[in-house]
Image 1 (cartoon, rainbow, N blue to C red):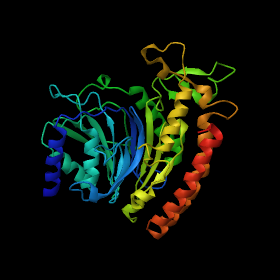
Image 2 (cartoon, helix red, strand yellow):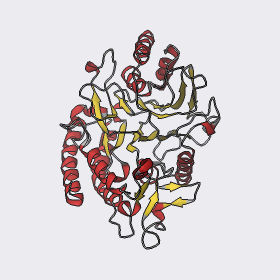
Image 3 (cartoon, helix red, strand yellow):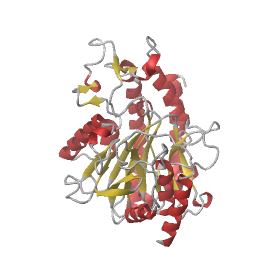
Image 4 (tube, rainbow, N blue to C red):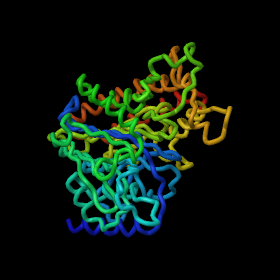
Length: 422
């Protein structure tokens, strides 16, 4: 506990140094193992921000004071160990992610517009093993913390919770508590419910869609990784308008194929998607799986990663390349820009508001997203088969991860070249 307090104090000094961070806006869900198909907790997040993302392995030897090594999503371009992380898992099976909250801070810090939402996630993975330790770490942070976030966490013991963090405290929401989450799940977008009116935040429509989808999954007994990626992470539904672009009613010949990007879970600013799948009580923490999409989710493919694989266990398509970017994220950006190619009016960021839905999804089945989903259906089965074997052995085979990734990297490079000329 003393070490956690010391680490928390050091982080606070870092956050108060006047460094600015890019705010992000995301959508997320935590589901207790009580409500999932196989009894393992699931935590999902779509990350929305500027720039690009890539996967990065943090060796505890390279992170000052770290107790644990960890792996996660970071911003591209870093030439040294990144100072921020936007979702990841460590060697003890602790998983951390967040969504920016725009209404949580009841007493904002005068003159401070930045936050430590990225650095805190890195610090928690470096220093904590359980959700209880996360709570202790947050309690030890001197105030004001500069945090404005819905922080999500699951661990290898099956604990799962959101912490609505603000500058002068936080409130915990235990997803395993039937009084807090009677159906075994909690959804968060870009507002919190602990301090201020919900309408002061952002992302209410995305919240509605995530809530609608997870209720369907629970009712059908299909709360699993595939459901999340096929129906939630790549959702193009606006429940407030009653719009579902995948219905086919918004494609040619019924329309001209264009639509307005408004309140969809997957949107122009979506840079990555991640599903953290925890373990059963009898399983080792190293089996914790991070199913990861790096890049615009509708134009890229999911590949799982494990902390046990280390830096070599990150597929080359997701890891930093010579330009310190993910190759797959860069390909996805090129394809996304082809979809968001509105050129009639370039004022007021119009190119990011109108998108060519026909390019992503069409009745002929040749859209960018349709091709990526078909390739994903080929890529994932070998990983799933390997994971089942590791679960039976209760041990991850790091060598097998590298072998699987080699095949995947070659397949993805060929896919983007043959299908899109990239």
